[in-house]
Length: 350
Ligand code: FAD
Ligand code: EPU
View 1 (cartoon, rainbow, N blue to C red):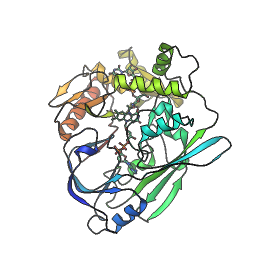
View 2: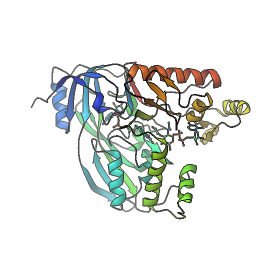
View 3: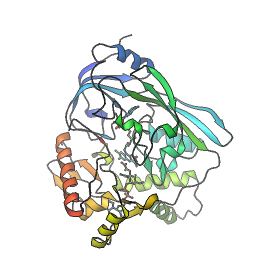
View 4: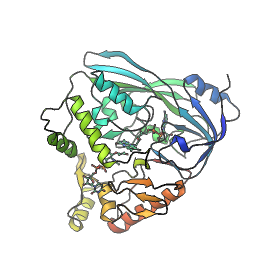
């Protein structure tokens, strides 16, 4: 069955920066069979492919001259776990934050620290989503990928996924990298979560601890953690439906002990976190803020007033304008601190 393909399709409704951009071709995939049909479709099989979930971690600096596939594979099912954990298999097109709410409600806790993160389940492993002390990799049984080069499905264990801070092996794949060859690559079609039956609150993240304390919660249950995380997020992150953004625009840079000591000598209020192996993660939001850029506006793009790590579309900005602002922010941070900050979202067509 040929798949319905839209030509010169507007991407504006399908990504959270809300800028104008077009795809040469666009299709919606609600099954692996649809992906298989696209692989055989002479109109698109040899073009670059880009898989789009909810578009909450991409910036279109220009149009995409290839095939955009909107991931819509559904399904949430409890599968055989083991004595220690529940396992839930979820289709790549399901909405992440709805899933977290649903699982907390159904007494399958473990993801509450990751409440409120926009996007699809299929995109969650791409950058190993993380927030408030938990990363996806810690709650994962396996990732099911369709390898479009060979038309095979396989299950990858977390150890095979190369997970790190905002990183995985998938980042170099079709849809996740400009360097990938044209045509179909590896696409995440489902994720199987592993939620320990012996639930323990992860409440050590300083801001979460403060929020729980302010609410008078001493021994939080999953629901309390869920509510506290959502409250913090709504205070400092803009709602993309109102103000276009992609969450943190830069990753927090990681530096050596020596560089950290040097920076601290010049900037004693620097916010940083020690990591294993003697390295330090720097709060990129602090670095940008310290450059005086919080609230800064360039054309129709800007640095969010409540969180300097978030770039926003102030209304009618082009992807290129946002990208120019991002480069200026990078330059200012490099000049002032000698530190490079790398974009977190995938930048398309820069
Ligand atoms: P998209 O933006 O559509 O895609 C992102 C990348 O993944 C692209 O390269 C795309 O090609 C690739 N991709 C998507 N789906 C697939 C698939 N099925 N197979 C292969 N490749 C695929 N992130 C965090 O980690 N923590 C946060 O706290 C957080 N907060 C955010 C807050 C806001 C307000 C916003 C707007 C974003 C935030 N993000 C956060 C970033 C974003 O929500 C996550 O990265 C999310 O996982 C992206 O999902 P998506 O479906 O929108 O992916
Ligand atoms: N800070 C400032 N000024 C700012 C912003 C931050 O001084 O304008 C300082 C504050 O001291 C603050 C510290 O930076 O305590 C860290 O800020 P925050 O707690 O907001 O966390 P973050 O490092 O900016 C990261 C993730 C978020 C995630 C939160 C909570 C990255 C790139 N970002 O933000 O993820 O929700 O921690 O875990 O790692 C995303 O990836 O899109 C995202 C929103």
